[in-house]
Amino acid sequence: MNKLLTLLVLFVGFQASAQELNKKKQDTFRNKEIMINNCTRESVCNFPEFKTMYDTMYDSYAPDATVLSALKPLMEDVKITIVMGTWCGDSKLQVPHFYKITDLLGITEKDMTLICVDGEKKAENGLIDNMNIERVPTFIFLKDGKELGRIVESPKDTLEKDALDLLSKK
Image (tube, rainbow, N blue to C red):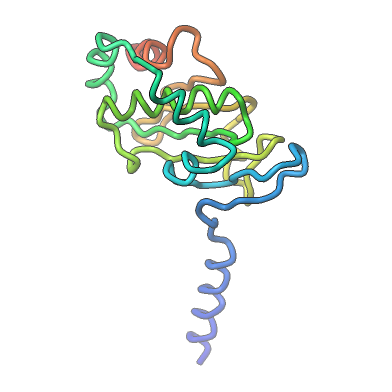
C-alpha cells in the first residue's frame, strides 16, 4: 500500500510539473495573447499573431546557397534551441528566415527546441532561467550538450553567414 501511495504521489507531482506544450496565455506585459514555454513549429507558425508575417518572411527569404553548402557539414550532431516571442517583431522576421535555412539544410524538428517567452522574456517553471536570454529571438547552437554559440536578436550579416562563422570556429 505504501508503494502504491508513493507511486501515486510521484505520478501526480510529475503531471503537475510537466510543461504544457503549445500553451497560450494572456500576457499582461504586452496585453495580448501569446504562446509560452515549449512549442511546436506548426503551432507557432499558425498562431494568428505570428502567421501572416511568418508566411511572407519565409517565402521571400533566399538564403545564400554557397554559404548553405559550407554550413551543412558543420551542422552534423548540432542541436538548436530557439527562444522567441510570438509578440516580437524581430522574432516575426528572423524565425521564418531561420526555418527556411533549416529546411534547406534538412534539419528536422527533432534537432531543434522551440521555446516561447512572454513580454518580459520569461517562460514558466524555470524553463529558460539558466539560458541568459536578454533579447529575442535567440538561436543557440549546441553540440554534446555544450553551447557552441548563439545569434541574438538580429544577425550581424545574415543568419546563415553568422551560423557558418560561429560553427567554423569550433
